[in-house]
Amino acid sequence: MSLRSRLTAGGIEQIDNGHPLPSDEVAPVRDEIERNIHYLLVEELGSRIDSTTEPDSVLRQQIERKLGELLAKETAPLSAADRREITGNVLDNILGYGPIQSLIDDPTVTEVMVNNADSIYIERGGRIYETQRRFLDQRHLLRIIDKIVSQVGRRIDEASPMVDARLPDGSRVNAIIAPLAVNGPMLTIRKFSREPFTIEDLIGFGTVSESLAQFLDACVRGRLNILISGGTGTGKTTLLNVVSQYVPGDERIITVEDAAELQLHQEHVLRLESRPPNIEGTGQVTIRDLVRNTLRMRPDRIIVGEVRGGEALDMLQAMNTGHDGSLSTVHANSPRDALSRIETMVLMAGFDLPMRAIREQAASAFDLLVHLARLRDGSRRVVKVAEVEGMEGDTIVLQDIFYFDYSMGVDEAGSHLGHLKSTGLRPKFTRRLEDMGIALPAGLFEYQAPARR
Image 1 (cartoon, rainbow, N blue to C red):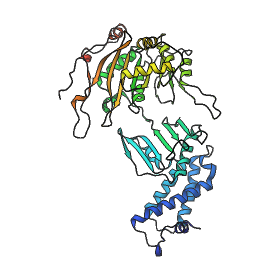
Image 2 (spheres, rainbow, N blue to C red; image 1 turned 180 degrees about the vertical axis):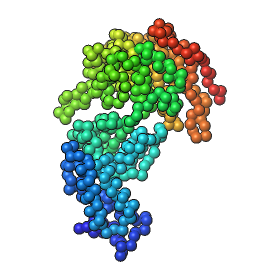
Image 3 (spheres, rainbow, N blue to C red; image 1 turned 60 degrees about the vertical axis):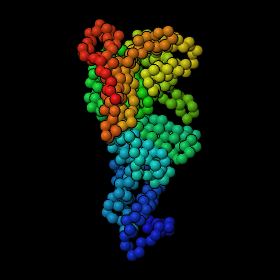
Image 4 (tube, rainbow, N blue to C red; image 1 turned 120 degrees about the horizontal axis):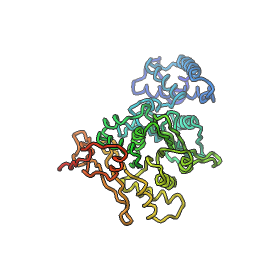
């Protein structure tokens, strides 16, 4: 049976005497033809589609040739543009990632969110937008998910219905299917920038100010322990990557990450990545295992991509035993909450430690807290920088150094007019920096009052 016959048999209205359908009826016909061709090719090519031994160029040529043959037999009055669209879509569906391929290739898209086969959203410029793109059906989405996770040596099925992995280009991917996903398979891809952002980029975006850039440069070179905090998608890892560029090139740097994202250009960099358990539930290597192992590798700097659990205890121990200049990130709503989360995660290590002892360790370990937020206009900004001054009673004392002035309001487009300002207070550790020969500009900490409403 020809594709045209299948369409007619499937209930789509027959075209009389080859005359074109009205424009509002062309799309369903084209979509049905595309779906049928897609599954014919998938059935015919079988395992060769996901084969790693056959060159992509050879497979593409065979698919294009077969596509041409199938479309030549099609009697539906498709325009040349329709045929080109079908060809491009089928190639993306089979060789690429289907309707999200162009979104992944688009440098302006920072995140792709597939809620189900009929619902795809993207993040662009810090804002979420719905797209008109759709998968052919749930089976098509499942095949793309399976293709993505298999490329990184993982599997997803009913026995293991959730995967958190990293694509070959560094992008983070999370997939979850039935029985955990009630509304259908879900896929989230946080794209990895092919060209790492520089401090100039962050200044241009308004994420940091020139004064803060100078300040962070001095703090990193001065081997201060820095913790970057913020919510999901606020740019913590991006800022960590940029700040890490300030580490001198003659130091031995070890990075520990759940999914390797940092792009350091120094020569002496050792990258460690955690490993999930295999299908038998064995072989797992946690962040905590790796942090403890770094202490045996003679590090000058330890950079932990994100602290999530019991590794917080080992990180505090490292910072308090001569491993100055360590950097990390943590999910939190404020600098104060960041320290509270560190306390909680230390308890997750399984040791019944007194809370005061944990706070003393944290107060001694961290020198500087940098907090980011994603504002309502979609921009990602550093909104607070605080020094950890020590303990006062049972409380860790924090002193704000820079703050974001929300009182400056927003413009007609809804963009925040505020920027980072100095509180006028000079951090106590500047004496330590001066002793190391690192001088800070005289006007860096000049007081800037908030705007009057």
